[in-house]
Length: 192
Image (cartoon, rainbow, N blue to C red):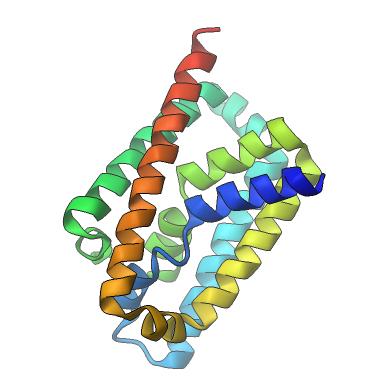
């Protein structure tokens, strides 16, 4: 179970990517004071955690309600993640996300931290490792993300602008690779 939990946590952490999102998160909250920024990040973690737990407990029922297979959801999530990864690689994420109102809910909580990829990852973790491992990985990853967001200025200062940009781009490559895996797995699943 420990190995499964570790695999599930690593996969979800790479998809949620709080470290790679540091430059984007700084850009989205640069006009805020420390207290407002923490409030926004608390809201983002609450929204993201709630979405993941909802899908951990009722994801399959939600898909059935809308008549969508997990394979189709994986393909759609993979395509959306691939688009996001390419936009981050080519243009940077700041320009893509700078149009939002309440940035804690949209775009930070959803879809930046928790989007189709994180939701799909959680549902796949249920299929692969069971509900207990999936729920624990959501709680662990979102707690680690919350800690990182609470100390985002320290993380950003440690990484520096260039370091943060490099990490964001490298994580975008991993995001693209995960997206391709989702698409391939979804296609294989839909052909069975």
